[in-house]
Length: 140
Image (cartoon, rainbow, N blue to C red; front, side, top):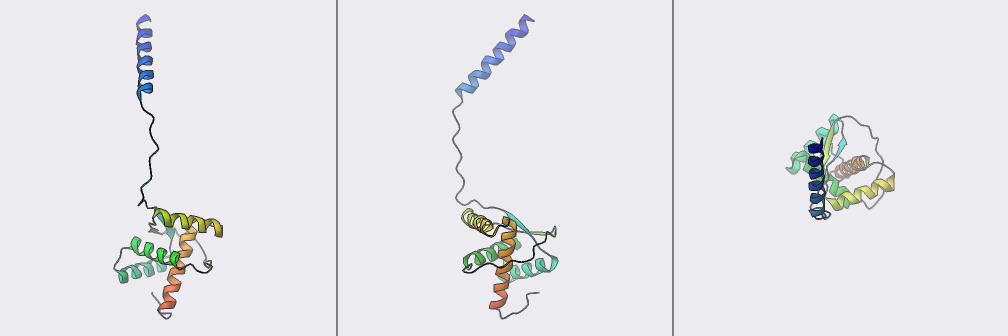
């Protein structure tokens, strides 16, 4: 029993020494080019339409959706219409940068929806405006 007490005391002393010697860690800075991955639900028809847009722009699915999102955010001079939102369990992704993510978050607060629903609205707004520019041609 005496030996166990000595071992315990030395362990406790070494633990307290380690805690005292460690410098306080600084808060880590976030990267300036940090991106956020946001997924949004799509129907099979919407997925096909978005993939076609991506192929026409010579981009991947995610980068074409991100491109559409950026164009919608840059064109948002008027109220963004509401679209019927349903979680289809089939998702596509967008990867906005930190500054665009903050704008999406502010819009989500303003319209009282989730960030995912806001991305869904913006993507549909971009598709709708793209179709009106092309003269109403169906992308399907």
